[in-house]
Length: 172
Image (cartoon, rainbow, N blue to C red; front, side, top):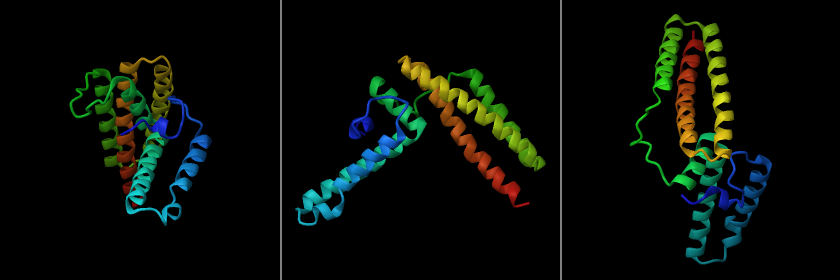
């Protein structure tokens, strides 16, 4: 993947002006609209379509804080293989196990009030990590930023699991 910031002519920064991003996205997509290439060669039409897809992918990366941070880190450290990384963050690993057990217990007890409290707790941790991540990226502390981004990635998966439990409890 190319540099998503460069595609939109944006500074490499975790804090993005979402309105500016949207404006640039619309301008790029307008310039690549199929009507603009109706009388072009098949190759030019295909290239415009590929560029449009690349812009859509870059937009998704820049809109998601985890993907945006990954992109920044990768620009400075090079591509990292997530499958090969070993989680050496033992404190957070223990926290993950505790959260999973807590969610299981809430699910078995069918306690929607406890689920609400649990969600608030996780959201608070997520917000704190995002703030720390922003600071680490500003300081160009790539290794620690990557560690926190891995934590956010886990929390994102946890929220998917929370949503599943929430849907299950709502059915009762």
